[in-house]
Length: 397
Image 1 (cartoon, one colour):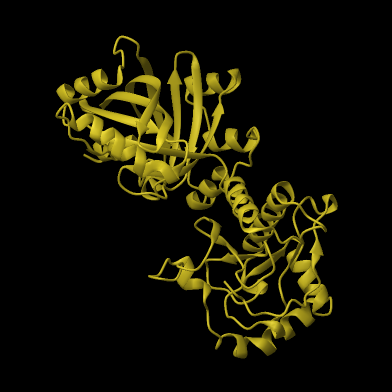
Image 2 (image 1 turned 120 degrees about the vertical axis):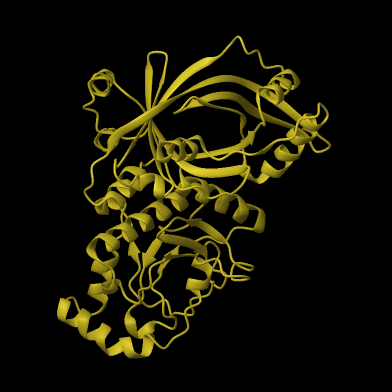
């Protein structure tokens, strides 16, 4: 996406002194004279002109038909997207808030901080995965230089890799920004007979099952997390309790992909869970993830706006898990199979197969292979809604 802005703002150099977060507003303010009065005077003088400019970013954010055909969206979530600047040099990127805003002052202090934090993550990812000749620079142009309406941040790494290296770096940067992802295929069976045939096809031994008890936390009255397609769950398997937070799904139908963050509860938290005193979001915020930044606790707190989470119920799942090699004319694919028998509230029993996919780009291949294998024994499958979705549906009656 070309922003057509002149690169005239002072380019802030990210350093440890900035806690790996570029001071976008402070630099912007300095470029405009260094005082709040100068900032607001500059914004006031430019607003009438800028609000008449074209906005090429919003159609991309809304995924309007054709808007992304020539774009490289490196990362996006509900509030921001990161694009490769097609008209910039090499790996130059643009960070765009999805909420309409023309200037940094149109954002709240919280939104400014979130934008700076994302900019810091983009800079860190580029520093980690690209071969750079100079430090990465990051800035927002002043009001007089803008030629599109929507606010955006420039991120300029000084390198111009060849196409193959460019593709590798973009993939690595996107993977780091998205963080840990749950990518899986879900197939539902019409009943136990079809599930038994599938077990035989894949050599799954139903005498070796893991018993899981899944407990969900949400607001008791309105199920706010569930309504926003987010999940807060504690799973007991043997003596181990695992807290899992899940973001919104980015896929439909059989293949789903969503951000997932997990913590194994320590002894103190386990005791709190047993006594009914456990607060999952407090625990998640106080215990950093290994090797990745946890973002879902803050996302959920913003959504809840002070509402408290409570234990709203559980269901039991019996799982057979096995690594498996799928094959087609393109070669082998290593996956993990999970055959589940789930008992929901009201003694409703469901049978399904979940397949952990190593790469979402091969999801269609895996889907075709599995369906062909099952059709050979007369089994048809259909997409399975998430267990959380079905659990809440049973709670609602």
